Length: 430
Image 1 (cartoon, rainbow, N blue to C red):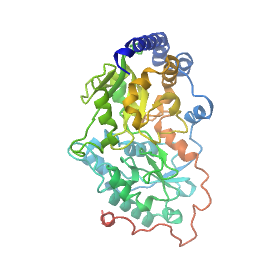
Image 2 (spheres, rainbow, N blue to C red; image 1 turned 135 degrees about the horizontal axis):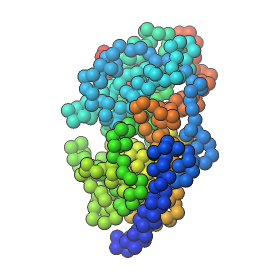
Image 3 (cartoon, helix red, strand yellow; image 1 turned 90 degrees about the vertical axis):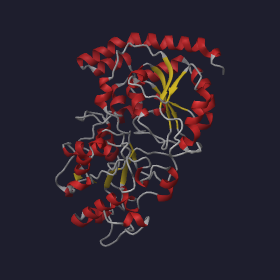
Image 4 (cartoon, rainbow, N blue to C red; image 1 turned 45 degrees about the horizontal axis):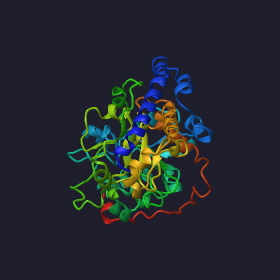
């Protein structure tokens, strides 16, 4: 569809969305000022119906108990002291989950009454000068921490880790590599194959997603986003918005591997389309611009997920998810099909037609659902923690796995894990 042919309907759509923002802004402002969130939800947003809405608002306290292993500082706190940048990158959930659990009501100091055991090891805190995590030491760090807990306490050995959970927010989770081909070749670290993995990576039928894993959002700094909020009655005058790489010439010089060509296709098809505000520039007004946009593109990069998904939900911008077979965070609580738009990678060239053909009623309903405070809260790791946030959604996911199934506890002396499996480099001491 030519861009000129859709100008009139798009202009009418933007006008309708802008009018809706004006009409609902007073309720949103009242909720912000008075804290009467439930009252505001009834007026300007829509609660998720059915079981998903109930799950989203669950309180996990009283439903599980977690024992936290007391590891030497070299596995966690010393890493952050050495490089505080770990606190601000999109993999920081592993750090803040540890901090949350230390003071959580679900924590128990009595391991014999614990439902779950947590090993606070930070595997993404080895950073390049540019601030990107290096995964090459991560398997050795993880193996070392498991060796430590299995030697000091009896609990790992009685289940081979089946009642333990680990936060592994790498690009491809516990496969510990940022390039998919190498992550697939590595597979999940053998010692973690009975544990529950809490990870950002999720893709159906993928070797790096173990059955029973809990998919979480990447870390996005809540305080920073809060500081960039604009008046809720600001019109959404941008139709489609995206900022980020389209090509990664440093790691993919031939241009066909990065993002499976999706981002390159976005640029080549829509760089001159006036409906699409897309660029590699990352302006100081990035967060403000997302709040002025109707649709925010969330294409895959090296991995299917990115912080854009969190930002889009928090800022009420309808996420356009372009990542085939992606498994999204807290999918049993957040109805992604209702709040977002899924576009198959092969259909990227038709994206303008897909978005301009959406009925205004569908767009406005998605925006009402996105305006639900519980929806936004579930995507964030705030400091301090708040009810229904991502910390609590993780605990809800763990609680729903209880009681543990038969076969978790092994007969004395029986082992299911091979401690010498995996690449030779992973077996070196750390």
